[in-house]
Length: 443
Image 1 (cartoon, rainbow, N blue to C red):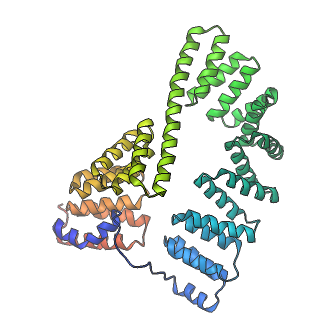
Image 2 (cartoon, rainbow, N blue to C red):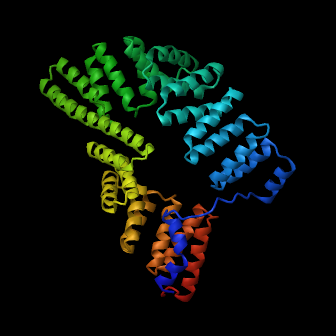
C-alpha cells in the first residue's frame, strides 16, 4: 500500500491524532449496561456517582459531568459535589466548578476534599483572599486535618500575613515537632520577628532534615549573620548559592559577611552578582505581570493584544519556555504560522526537553508535508515524555505516511499500551497491519 491510500484511509484519524478540531454532534454518553440498568432501577446519588466515575476513568469528562449533575438532582452527598467540581475543572469550566463546590460546602461544611479543591481553584484564579477564607474556616472546624492546616499556613505565608502565620506555625510545630516544613516556616517567621536564637534552633534542625533545600540554608545564614557568627553564616549562604539560589538577597547578605571578615574584593564580587541577580528578578517580575495581563486579554477575547503581551513577557524572560509556548498557541489561533514556529523554537531553546513544544512543532512540519522533519520532532516528544499517547500516535501516523509500516506499527502498539481503548489508534493499527501484509518488511 502506498502512502497516499494510507493517508486517505486514515485522514479523519489524522485530524484527531494531530489535534485538529472537527465538527461533531453532542458526545453520546452510554455507560456499561449494568450501570445504566442500575440507574434505571434506583435513581440515587450512589448510582450516578458510580456511573460518573466510570466515565471519568474512561476519559469522557463531559459525560462524567452530566452523570454527577444528575446525581445532584436526587438526594446527594459531599463526595458527589467534589466529583462534579473536579470534572468541571478538568473540562475547563473553573467558574462552574467553584460554584458547585461552594454550594457543596454550604450543605456539607466538613467535606475536606471539596474544601481543598475549592482552595486550589481559588489560587488558580488568583483569588487568594477567598482561598484563605475557605482554608481558615475549614481548618478551624477540623483541627485534626493536618493537610488543611498545612495548606492554610502556606496561604498565609504567600499572602505575607505573618502576624497570623506565626502563632499557627508555632501551634503546628508543637503538634509535629520534627516536621521539616513547620520547622522551616516557623524559623522564617521567628527571623522576621527578630527572634534569632529560636529561629536558629528550628532552622538548624530543618537544615539537617532537608539539606538540599535552598531557602532554609539562606534563612539560617541570615540568622547566623544577625547573631554575628560570620564564618558559619558565610558557609550557609555559600551552600544556598551552590544549591542554585536565584534570590539576589543571598549575594547581598554574603557580601555583608565577607566585608565583616575583611574580604573586600570577594565582597565586591558578590555585590556585582547581587545587582545582576536583582535585574534578572526584576525582568521575571515584569514577565509575570505581562503574562497576567495577557491572560486577562484572552478572557476578554482580544487574542491579538494577548499575543503582543506574551511576546513582551517572553522577551523579558527568554529563559522561561512556558511563556514562549503560550505565545505559540495564540499565534496559531491568529494564523501566524511563521510566528508560531519561531515561538516554539524559542521554547525548545529554553528547554530542550519541552515535549509539548516538540509535538506542536512536529504538527507544523506535518502540515507542511515535511514528514521527515515532523518525525524528528515527534521522536523528541516521545523521548521527553514517553507516556504521551498523543505523541506516539502522531509518530505512528507520520511513519505510516512515509511507508515505514513496521516502525509505524511499533509506535502505535506503544500508543495502545498507554490508551488501549482509543478507537482511532485501533483503526490505525488495523490499517498498518493491512499495509504490512501487502508490503512485508525486507529480510
